[in-house]
Image (cartoon, rainbow, N blue to C red; front, side):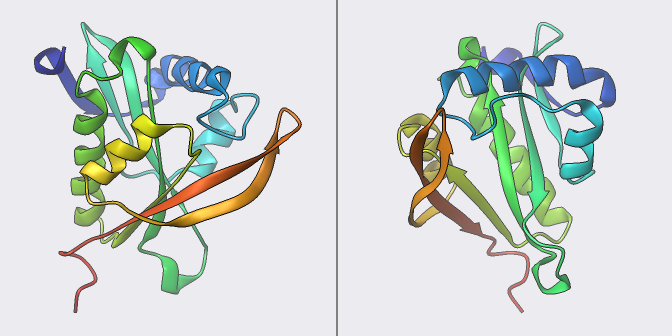
Length: 167
């Protein structure tokens, strides 16, 4: 599948499929604290307008990646949180690697120096994917929130650019 994958900038017409993939992640109960997918307006407002990508296979979206600012403070303008979601059919086929590499490259072109990821410890595949791209485990944030009535920990990973913000 990896050879047949194209990575494109996300456009509004991709939203329905992006949302479906997000819902698939929600249903796993290991991808997000959200229990419902937002509508386009809410999602669009929360995510940066830059560095949004979809992976397509046979013309259909099979994964996506986007960035969210971590703070509105100017000092943190180069620090973001990454969200990456794949269909179950795309898992383990290199799609996540292609998307994460694309968002890293694009983020550095846009003067972003740190990308954070908050991942449930049970989501080993996602943790390993991020580690493959030089994300380091900062620590585990204990009982960050409740999902379906149960307290959940999240692993905080961080990737510091060696090209941007190094002066």
